[in-house]
Image 1 (cartoon, helix red, strand yellow):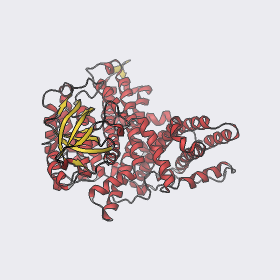
Image 2: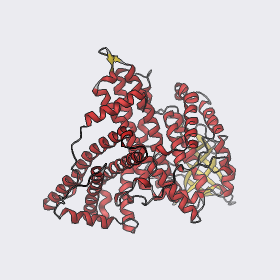
Image 3: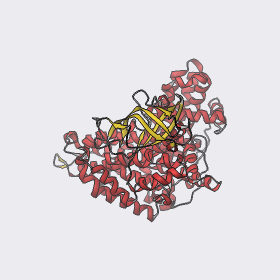
Image 4: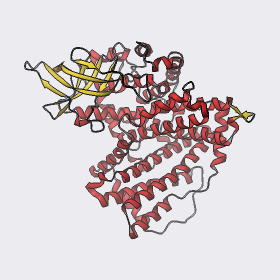
Length: 592
């Protein structure tokens, strides 16, 4: 890392405690090596991938494999793989940065992410030394390509309901796999498959399966987007897998699937951010060139509003992404210092911040969907034409709200993990809830306000946290063990958590930038932070009211609605002028 910061908070604890800007990492702190790796990846994308997007979408024979081979030669397939396995051995945030840059590569980004993430990481984190030595060096260079087989026709979000069977052979040397997997990325050219199957009907277990006898493929799926990504069904018919290729422990496959998903979720946010930046930049450049009414459409307020809002959403997402990434890295280093292996340390660190990973998966994918939608609108009629870039961007973005667990699942997971950690005593949510309840019944403090930059904004964010704590406490008290059935309320609460984490992350980044550069050199970032926070508060108020009205009536309802109103008060902000200033800089720079 380019800066040494010490995380003061545990995963999920951002809701309960104050965060100092000195305790977060921001993208402006990348070191020279990280910038060089980013530039190298960007050059690769510009010269090897982007000129061939149509050919990639046609799935020209061997093209994707050749691109992955070239990426392997540059080391892009082994960014986070230890050097002893032909990798670069870089820290977690560096791997996120590379993922972000590649994220602008449409279907290629999907293929690379599947290979380097869910394809390789199960072997790195759960494989034994023999398995790592056999597979990781060749996967790191691209000599072997990887795929991940979890989903089945009858099991998607409910992954543990998989029906693929693994039966031990009579001589005890092989497991014989029979079953069907679907929506398998990279299936058309993969050499190695990470496969999940049931042993004895109820022992959900991972396997490393090589392409060969017993493995067959369906036709390429016809998809809405990411057309260049190979997506097929994979069939296992009496597929003999050596017993030494059992991955991890028998019956513990869920640990592989769920822990890898934590890392996959935050990496999806990084890729979505990269795609958002490329889309926004294309929209800015088009707006500067397109003439209507004898002037560039970039001069019109309606277009400036769109460009500014794209940048605002991406700024908050980027701030949250690398804040969480650095905290995962710090936790990893701490676990290693305590004696855990590299693999054990990162898995535990990602698990610690699983709440933040789920938040970022939702936020990143929805920011991208917003950006591509507005990108189409900026291009107007040309945005609807397949001869212009917004067509592909629009179609390719949509899958991200389904990948790595649907956004609905991730919203409910956010709250489920928060409540479970509270019940275990890992997070002191109850004390925070009681403090908010006490404040609700007390007379508001109308004392003199503190002065200083961001004092008001910090108070607003603290109050946003109170909304979710107040509503979550009431929901837990009313529904108890039946709360999981109240999905609409859980999604309201999760949305408040997401907006709060994003807003706080943007504020912390901007505050740190001001400390580094001075306020006069951070007006652009200050504008983006204030507009994001202003709009987030309004959304929190709406979600808070919906949650309260869904579960309360009478005096308790009136008191909690007053609490929502009290905790979502803000000072007036001229967002029109702020967005115009933001857009002016984007247009002058010609990029996001």
